[in-house]
Image (cartoon, rainbow, N blue to C red; front, side, top):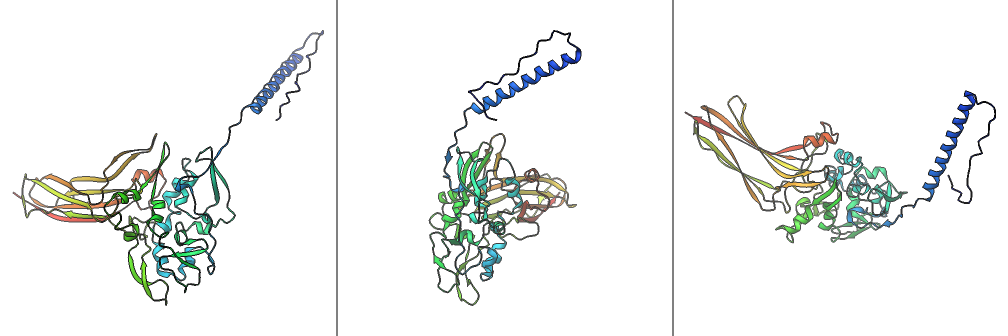
Length: 427
């Protein structure tokens, strides 16, 4: 509705009646006056809205690394697709290893999809899970007034939905500028290949595995693995690739002869994304169990010490997702396998997410740090008891899984250590 400041709209004058006013006539007059007042009110509101100052819209450029997708990549000459399956036609072993990796499930992961559907999840969260612009439905060029929930976006004419499902695939790391980037380079490949060890370094890993920002009061992105590694004892000696892509000798392509290569399982937590699936595990922890004596007297105190050391990881353990944690469970069972005493210890961060995201505690193990846990039990009746120690690695709590609507088929933890000892109690 437009306003007309040069014209004033007025209702016609009400007629003067000399005859007696009947009930019906009075009703009509009342309705007419009410209608006239309503029209005036609507016109006043429309005029007020039209004349209200409009919000100034400034387009803020993207600045943080996690706000960017990798620009559109052309398919290198000699290839027909950027899909991992296409690469796997020749690089069979690399492809089969990648299929078991967390990278392959980065987009389809049920937890990530549940998080993505929340109103608090901004569009740029996808940039680490489907990093190629080719995989994204929209191209984001900026933010209206710097608001992460108001991206300036347009439809991506090159969007490939099938490619999107592959998450972090071969092209995410190896395709740039119309060429396949590799650590060695070759002129025997059917596609253009460029040697680039600078690009294929830990810098590429850290571009996603080191995003630390408080985005909104209730939304924090806290992945500090890169910073932890830089502050640790392995910086300058070993990097992400040294441990998570172990070196081997094999044929990159059948018939091309053996050469230096690396495994592409990207071993990590070992907790699969799908029930029944395999997930390669790289465990940074070493366990040093104590010993029990040959026998104990009734009424005596059993004191058992179990040591855990972050012996192998160049970063803190656990690392990455702040919801990951370890549980160490001590159980003393009687001859009937009934639990006499149970004790649990937790290693990991604890966060409060609402009404404001903040870390409540953090007892992650630093690189090289050793910690001793003690289990004490007063031994009662005579007999044989069992002391059981189990360590489990967890992706999230059961309550978090329920909050995200994840079903029973979504694995939440795996056992990574177990030790069982017999405790004899004499009179």
